[in-house]
Image (cartoon, rainbow, N blue to C red; front, side, top):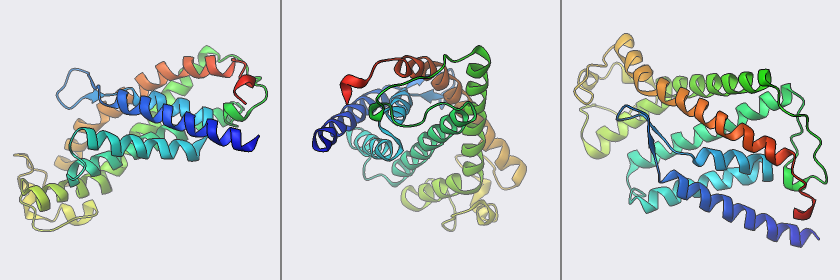
Length: 236
């Protein structure tokens, strides 16, 4: 019985990973050149409630590696770091939904491991709070990480490997980055002080993460509710 389950589990992983990769290749423009999202996060969240956190981490890793390979960026350090940031965003989304589900006492055992599923229908207030909560958490986590760690490393990779930015050193945090003379000309923009730097981060990432949080939540919650109320016994 356990052997059969492991085979089914592998099939679930392969299926979810394939769907995530396909959807990740189609970006939806939201009005601004840098404001694009894909719907692969929907697959990630469905996998999370279906087969659990650990298996979904594997799906996120497969999605990232295959997406970079297909796009021909697997050996480009800046693109690989961008993929790491995307993975962090996916994990943050999962964590946000998990915490809010616990607040509302919803079952958290993976759906394909349950013999039955008795979950109350989501109320309008829970729907709104979930959308707002997930969006706020995702936006805050990603903006804070971008301010202090991910953007300094991203800019340093651009400077070190592509020599597009005139930074004089490699920076793992913002605290050394702002002291670099090269910050006066980052893609033609002066980011040499906290005010300019924070404005740049918020302008580039706040709207992106807010849009991702809202759109992903609004699409995923109805799907989650449908799965919660399906009879999944035939899958076990």
